[in-house]
Image (tube, rainbow, N blue to C red; front, side, top):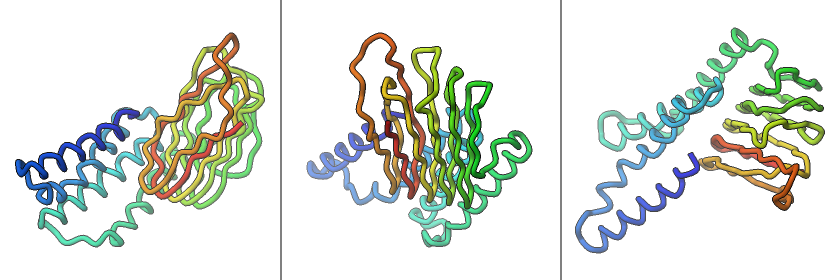
Length: 225
């Protein structure tokens, strides 16, 4: 996933170069830009091990497919007409978490998970979790029209690294980490942003690595210590 933004920029640059050299007419390729959304969604759908990530991937693929069909003249779609997709995604996420992870539903809570993983979902609301001690091994945060706050400042990590997958759609996710954790962001922002506000520790004994990856669509992910 971390390669996606670089590959997209390179591809756009190549197209403009070919257009300037009159080898390819770039305007003919603009109709296919939604393929980028489809590709990112497919990676999320296949690569994600959490329901929230798969739902976000499915939404990206659906939106990209409809916009592509509109650009190619197969059907007429206004971008504003696609907003119900987010309600459908929210409903699927609510159903999945009610059936498979009833304890992860959004709400103001403070808890210390025992399995080492977190799975927080906030839909039209907020979810707060404080991880104290234990062996943090990663997890997933989903925020759709809501906000998620995860406090890891007093968390322990037995392994050298852990992965936290974040899916934010019209929402926000705030993550607090210990001062001896090195944060690596590999998120894909789509009209959103990933913001690393941490003071990175110098490499050495006791320094842990937290990989934060995922997608932010009209939303933001903030990491700080």
